[in-house]
Length: 94
Image 1 (cartoon, rainbow, N blue to C red):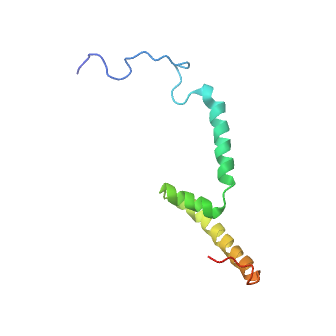
Image 2: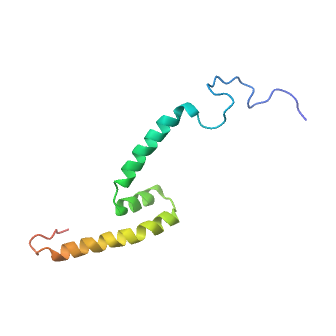
Image 3: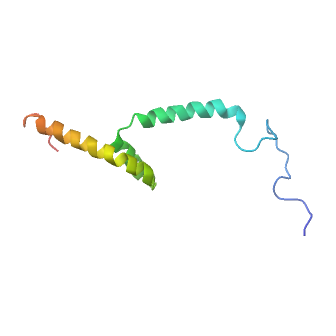
């Protein structure tokens, strides 16, 4: 076995928390704030927009799609009922 200098880990790290592996603990507040902002932006989306976002990201997300499917169907049904109640002069044309 070769006992020469190693390629990984031989350099000196100038890290604030040397004994801790993984993410930097001093950035915890920044990470949690950005997560709250992202979650608030995602919660503001409609179910159709959330589904479109999943399609754009090319993610499978089967459970999330299954959870969103009834919500999308209910939203589309509500829009159809709303459009059916409007007089013909106020209906939107495509």
